[in-house]
Image (cartoon, rainbow, N blue to C red):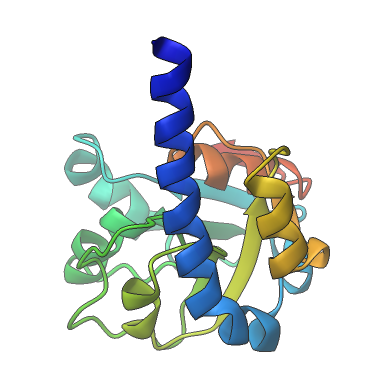
Length: 182
């Protein structure tokens, strides 16, 4: 019973991912992958900023270092709104949300670079006004192999624990940062 249940969930999830990628494909093809941003992280002190309960108490520290050229902020999609309200504009934001979410509505995202899973909900991407680079997940087997072939194998593949912050950490660690803060 569990095998059948897991297979059903995988098939349903596969349909959502395939549908999203189909709608995102022209944008993925025009914007490309992570190759154009990986050098930005090299040798920098990188803070991956999540939207957890520690965000509010760490805003003063983030404000203190926001102007330093050797620091780089990579924020989770849900952390962007509170950061902007606090006067902190991260250079990068990451999203892997495959269902519609209102992370970016009413926000000035120009001048911020979005790192997006290629199967992110297209309605979320339509609200973004800055640059975008796409990536695939580092997982093979159906339905993923077909998706990555469709999206393009040159986007870059990111190890995932299925949450946005682990994907951010994976990207940063692959780029030889001076240090990583969470």
